[in-house]
Image 1: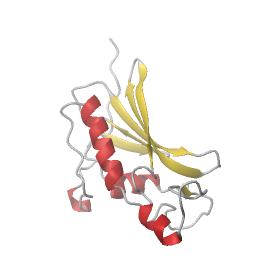
Image 2: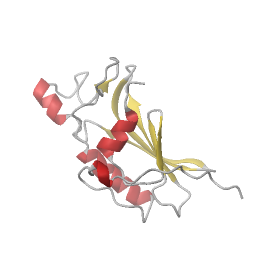
Image 3: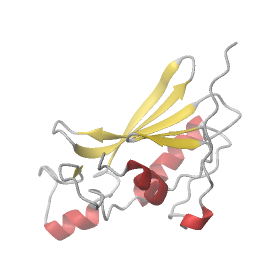
Image 4: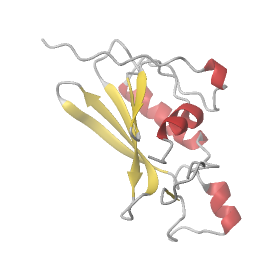
Amino acid sequence: MSLFAEQFFDDHLTLPYPEAAVVGNTYYARPAPDLPLRLRISFTDTRMHQRYDGLRLEVVHPESGLIDAQWLSFADHGAFAVRDKRLGTTPGEGSYGTFTDWRHTDTPPWQGIGTAGLRKAIGCYVQLWFPGAPPVRSGPKPSAALPSRTAIPAARSR
């Protein structure tokens, strides 16, 4: 898959959860190890195949399933504001606040994305659902400071 999802979550969102994994184009984490809840973040696509316009955040309980879901629009969080301004793209135009994954290149299709607004929104969401979870920093972490990820333990049966 040319979406480069692992690179996106590791290098751009840089979330501080050591118990995390990227599978396909979805990030899974356990922000608060003492809670059974899990965080799932995936790209949301538009009605056009392989055009993405945001992230879907979900809180999942291993036994009960989906607890809550929110959509974070790239446009609402300024993710492509610089690119769209440079290109003269305005709200309502097809590519405004989106990226497409139609070309199979060595370059991520979301190159140049600004993630500060997304990180702030994710941080607020996580603090609401996962009290005690490490806070999401407003700026990107240096790669050397990233915690190493470990496997997320399976839920225990009662």
